[in-house]
Length: 429
Ligand SMILES: *[C@@H]1O[C@H](CO)[C@@H](O)[C@H](O)[C@H]1NC(C)=O
Ligand SMILES: *[C@@H]1O[C@H](CO)[C@@H](O)[C@H](O)[C@H]1NC(C)=O
Ligand SMILES: *[C@@H]1O[C@H](CO)[C@@H](O)[C@H](O)[C@H]1NC(C)=O
Ligand SMILES: *[C@@H]1O[C@H](CO)[C@@H](O)[C@H](O)[C@H]1NC(C)=O
View 1 (tube, rainbow, N blue to C red):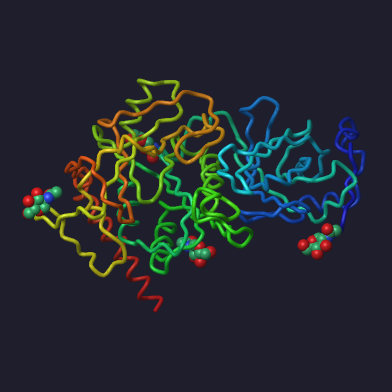
View 2 (view 1 turned 90 degrees about the horizontal axis):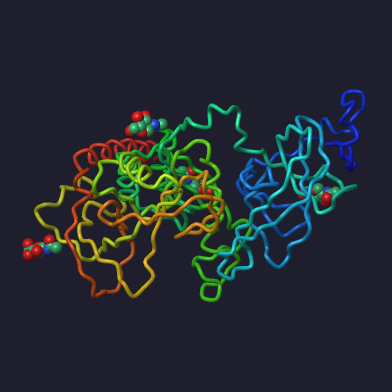
């Protein structure tokens, strides 16, 4: 590709007589030269990484938000450069917002905010360390997502509910539990499950390929270990590493912006968790009620309840598992609910209206526009089918077979997906 020296003020100068002034040499064919199709893009001449660029005009004075991973001790002045339908823009100033929840790690989820210059139909954006006179041939450009095409489309959503599973990692291979949980989401009205995939076990990979072909699941590759040493834990002082929990906070935030124009609500929970209505058959009728009672609310907090592993009792009520050869555990065996321990922090998860949230953490949002509401336990609980054995805790336990209310619909669907998956596993050797 030909190189090109960026000329500052180009955009402004040519405003009046756009067509008569030739663009800088090479501009038309260098804009953009290298387009990123990766979910993690190293930013030239810096220690930072870009994830996705979104059109976001909710905060006054800004048009663009780039979800990024910044090294907190190396933040320099940056400038946005746009590709405007084939020509380069002038640069605009950048505001770097490091999320406050970084838990001491050197790298943090970060928002890069800037404005689109006038008379630019921006299609791609990149960041420069110099405002002018720099070599732009090597810049990697990010496509700008969430550009609204028309006003009417704002009100129609492709999905009622999207679930975000931030970072699947460590060769996770819980096929039975994964399939049951995905089908449970579907029965509750979820249209899309976005999974940020660092790595998965062999059989689970096959299952997820079936689910993404079929349309319920959308996989986003997340090879964070190729760029950083991601932590296996959440606290730098305890677990070390470059970035909190495989970049969970980055993927969670990206996952709010991805579905923003597509999904009415987004559920932020892990794959071993099911946000379960207790008075309604599905999430839609529950949210219709809650939203009517709390019209200005954009964040609904759902209390977590542990359904521990060890207390399972093979009673006659247990559905017959045809799933003996399938890796993973059977969530239908989780029928004992623990009361939350009042002495410790009880993690909650969230149902959000993405358009009312600006930044999120795992258990709460960091910046938002509307109100928050803590949903009462009799309306909705999060069923946490913990994967790990917990130490015995002296908490009251209750028999809770809410999952069984769905088993007649759930079991044939899980069987069907597992049948397809087995065929594929066998077919591949
Ligand atoms: C452009 O990128 C290539 C490969 O990343 C690198 O070798 C080269 O030095 C870069 N050129 C400039 C001018 O930065
Ligand atoms: C959303 O839920 C309503 C009511 O259940 C349903 O009629 C509609 O088809 C759903 N929309 C999508 C996109 O699934
Ligand atoms: C998940 O990521 C791994 C590692 O990049 C990849 O090999 C695998 O195919 C991915 N799985 C799916 C279902 O996309
Ligand atoms: C487990 O099984 C025993 C014997 O059948 C029964 O007495 C007990 O109540 C069961 N526990 C639960 C939690 O269902």
